[in-house]
Length: 342
Image (tube, rainbow, N blue to C red; front, side, top):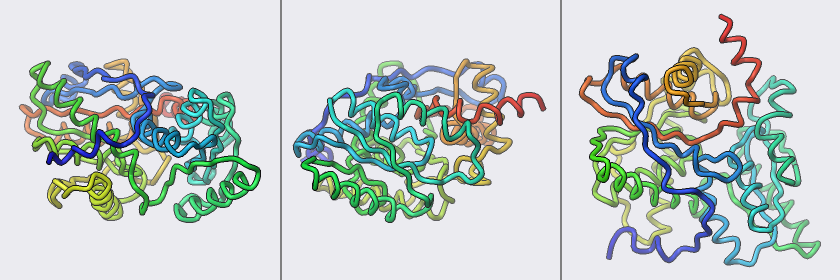
């Protein structure tokens, strides 16, 4: 039986505009004096300005509808792309959405708390909750359980999209599927890719993509750019995620320890905080390719991609996964403009 045979039996609700295109980045590659660069445009998945979470939510909403849920609960940072897209998916499917925003970024101003994804959450009609801690995934999930219990008491049928490890990683299946999409596109376009660079946060996108590629016998290197925690902590998370995907698909994991490549060189000073490399990546991508990146995820992962390109053999080809996050640009408007003036 194929490693991915079980995948096609798991409930899924179409939400994303796929396949998303793969485009060359000739101007950026020329500027860097590196090999050939490409971008996978998962910022173009539709669903309230797009992003990688659309692929993940197809499986969570598929499961929710299978269970007869009428209400979705999800937790994330104040500027979470995931909760914004969950609110959009719920609206599209006629479900109520409760979102819980966690305090992950200290000293954030009014712009961060009122613009960007937060503004869209409200426009999409989500019911808003807050959680005071930003590094307490188990506590954030437990608080969602408490909210869900209240909803059940009032006759609702809630469905929780969990944050912490230890739950079936349904969202990762979206990127197991994306691996097949990418390989088909590369074959059709006759592109030779040596390495893929992707943001590594919750681990669903990174682990799902790596799992899918190895299950399909592709040995393309996948480098995860740390955006939430340091390399050692993220290594444990991706290892666990791959094991959880294998359990969900009732198969052996095709991912070996040496397959899990991570860099935290562009992560400091931490989640949601800009650094010089991230600002350079945002600036170069916009001015050379018309490609918009956010400071939290794609800016940092593109910074890692640029570093990899500068360090690599000039004959090497790298594919950058653009995971979206465009609304976050507006939450960091003042910081980005102040850097432009320097």
